[in-house]
Image 1: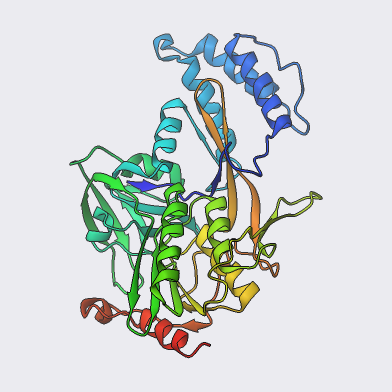
Image 2: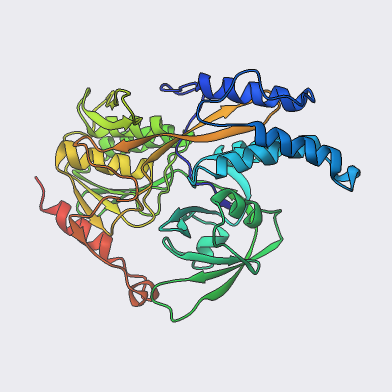
Length: 400
């Protein structure tokens, strides 16, 4: 399946913020529905007249012809979903209890589907990146591919969560995606067979010339331990330089990105600014060390599949150390979502802030531009050539 582009800060991570006023409004709203109260909620909502909602509710309850189809629980969830969708933010979503459970399973790094991250960009449903060793990757799905249809259903005006519901499925079943790619003349149907997807965190090897090459696939909880082990191996190997590959890395947990940045930065340097808008103060996330890779010359690879935590890490290394970025422009997914759980098992994923690089540059909808733009052509792919990596190695060899 396609997983939801996520930059989730959950209860276990610092910076978790409870939206008490919002929750109180939902609580009073929900209580009126669940108790069968036909009057308006006791607490009015500023700037909103809910009397029309209640009139509609009572009219449906009284006049709808097929009483057997009236499911008040589904009506509550449908009303909330409609309210959230009206915000027109592709990353703010309400999950009923079943969908909430599936979302949390996906975030843990193992699920059944086709293995790719998706997002909305310029109004189109796009692939952020295929996951390593997934059916999507094996079928040739690329970052920035536009998903036009899912099993014949148009994705126009479809949210990421609606797309996920259509694409996800049981191992062994099929889903057909109509894909458009800029270099193609028309859309192509790609049939994918769903499988169990296990998200790897990274891969490291020492290349000729004493260059440590780290491919970081995703900022999962496991990535922290895996990166620590890789860093120790690099230090013990005698490698003198590092190429950090963040291509097709769709992001993950903020604190994992922050912790990995701490290996490359001095303690106390800014990793990212969290801008919550309005008059609220910007919160800074700082490097906490151990800074053991701070002395190594580094070059970072990015492309259109580098999103969220990848962009934060790349931006932090660029702004603090002048580290060069090689490849193509990153995705531009610079907002942060918070999961708010509710007592019935449902949950709300809500955009609460936007990320800025240490120098104050906005990531959302803009992305990071590489210092050295290098494209990979179809001919390069067929010949199994990687001119982006070649350029990164060329540059890092010249660094002292």
